[in-house]
Length: 373
Image: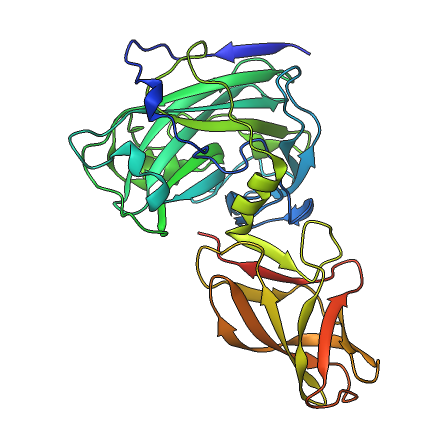
């Protein structure tokens, strides 16, 4: 399969000693997909491949999948496939469709944003689409509400292309050194006039919606035959072109999964990537208090959501009774390392005070723990 490179050359290249020990982008090779493939998506949410979010306002219906279609010979095994399933060829002014990923401020201090030593940066990735045309890549500092954008062109249909996006330094607006949302990276594949009628900020400026995606004409939502695939996302400090940018920094599967689990985790699920049990005791005959230990510390106290009714079994260790778990009744304790959940059971056949554990059953087993940005 043909591969092409699209680089933006600059003479200003920072020393490699500013390269971080771990990639700034988590799961840039799209290897972790805890949520699984998705269909019928019509609104913004975190999607199939971990850490990536789709922003969507009234612009068709979409599916998202972890694909094995990748640029060859580079070590990538997975990509994110975005597929239009219901088209919208005439977006209203307020409509948009863009892929994004968000970062914690404490992980981006190396950029020295908001200081006299602020650094340039370079975003690189591989992309493939059946369509040719322009789209905008944007950095949005959500803390200081500042943004900068770059128009990028898909020039060859159905061909993996490596795109390089250079972004200037910003001496205004320091990033808080916390676990809060900081810079968001976006790929704008379709948008209405509310986002395209102004002037694209090629230098950092205060956010204006009309300026965000000026130059986007790809129109990915105009036909159900349209799709885009992306992988190999990396973000480097400094200014690089296609020849000088460091190689993609692969992480082993365990490390990448652990970094993703800081933000999202499925507990008591049949999938091998998750914990399969939760332990506790019966509070009453039809309630059980279960302690879930997280495999890694989460970013903040997570939100717990049962994925479906009766998708777990509560087993009484004393008498062997098995009772379906109906719903989450309340959260009794919550921190970054564990959570104590009181569940309502389907029947009143439990014995208060008996020890119990819950285990998965059904195709949508488990409970999710979410501390996404």
